[in-house]
Image 1 (cartoon, one colour):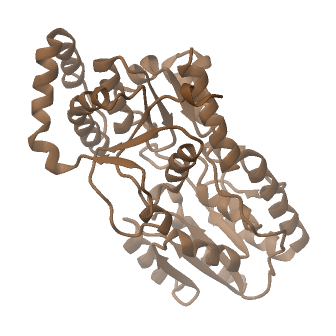
Image 2 (cartoon, rainbow, N blue to C red; image 1 turned 45 degrees about the vertical axis):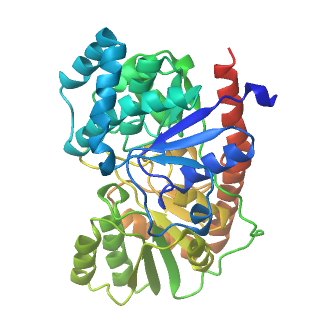
Length: 410
């Protein structure tokens, strides 16, 4: 693959870098390291808090919009109207005369549409040859509109919240994209059935995680058993069922401690539940923790639990990165068969899968792992091997680069 085939690429994101999107940051950084010229364009402003040292040290090209750009963005709507009145009028009509779904996604898409006219202008100026959106909602909307205006090919990645439920432009974005990446086969099956788009347009590109330098190890499984859960405190994580499972474990007189790492809108609700279940002495909420500190939690954990659910809104996880990170540290995992998790965890082989929203099943899984230590160690090792095979960041990002080159050199 020669350098002259690597096309100048724009990544459109809401924020960059974002502490909770280590997988996106890793992809951009590694693709740059492989020689792909990437410029990042964000629809929102700068995030300052909770950035890892790698994120703080990032020196790649980033152009940020944000609320201050509101005052000049209308000029570029006018620019495109004067340049291509028919095309611009039709695009605006397709956006305005449409029934949008959900307040948050509507707001995100509305801002993305507004920004896209400037981005289209900027992409031509910066000689962008490929536009990629790492999310299928607002980011892909901006990519689609900019592509419609400039004829620069675009692609997008779909993950979880961004397609469950899908926004009102998903059929247009899927139809017009050069190709669509997915971090799970589950998503491909879902969106292909929804849009009736050719299956050939979809590409499975698992997220990459840095391979741990930790050698094979066996967690101690000694009292008090150290349980760990990591992630945003939102509905789809199912933390309330984990706390209820802790109540079950407590009635069984099992000596344990649960650490919950993360922050989010459910924090107060979960703390109230914790208090009502009289778990305050055995459950610790650690809040958001910087990425560099996470290995400490994984090294101390003996069981990792991610009790994902399909939320009433339809939102769900893809394959949570924290499951991958737990397995790179040889920690046995308990999760649910939601979305793409089945592509990582084979029940009883590389982890334990329990029905969603089932506290008793979670408690039973914990009991199994602490009483059958060898089985727990074997599952952790098998899970670690699965991560090494399918989610190696270096291998997966090389495949992404080859994928870009294949589509865009034709």
